[in-house]
Length: 353
Image 1 (spheres, rainbow, N blue to C red):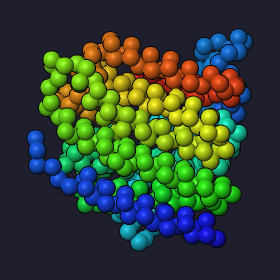
Image 2 (spheres, rainbow, N blue to C red):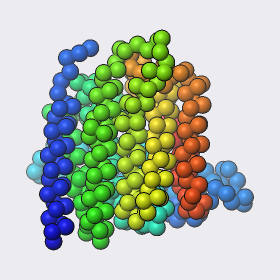
Image 3 (cartoon, one colour):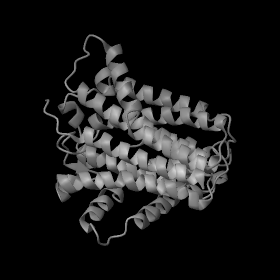
Image 4 (spheres, one colour):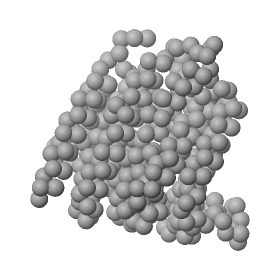
């Protein structure tokens, strides 16, 4: 009982802290396959096409499972129907579900079940959806297009969009707390919540966004090293932190050892940074129609990007190096069980939108 009471008090304090952090961040700125052993990358009997086909089947299965779970978490009903609609608008839009899939794959890798990790996987996607709503606000990136549709505040207004983003954060904490109902030990639930909130706050998204804002218009023409260091800080916090949390939370609730969790953390950090490198390249090489969001907006805003600092080709080479490094961190795991994480990394580095 004492352990559960301590967990409740911790959840309350975390939520209040998150509310304060996001209030600070959102103030206006006044300056310019269903079984993993079927995915065996070392099998010589599989052609490249058949492996890709099996992996896409795996992704489709996981994506459907995640979408159903997300749909169930926010019913359309009173009270606050409009806020629920705004939450669902972004949360259930046509996303890739990379973060929840990473969470589920990590859980299964260390011996857990999909059903055990699903609340954590949904929680991570809720945090991601919240960050997208806030990132698109006029006081942030001021964007009008996301996933091929008008951004949340364009549909529901800035006031409802902010409230929907806040509600998604609160719901994410609640979702993770429900892991206790699935017989996940309270200490593991608390550890997972702390991992998630770290990825959101001053050690994660908030810090990355603040650095991103500060970097607008900054010139590193004569100091590429300083520019790259600033860029790495932004995206290790703004992008990689949440992907890292997804993988680590999955490993925690799946019962992974400290050594396994640390290996997966390093893998996820590489994958998270790689995700952003690829995103920056796509931003300057694809159209808005292909991306489903406004292309070239970072360039127009004078933001630091990998192509701006090192060029498009070197950025692509860097993404490939990160993919190789990510795979090296997984060498300690069984090659059959680790296949989904390997293929997810390949999918991220080769994606076209």
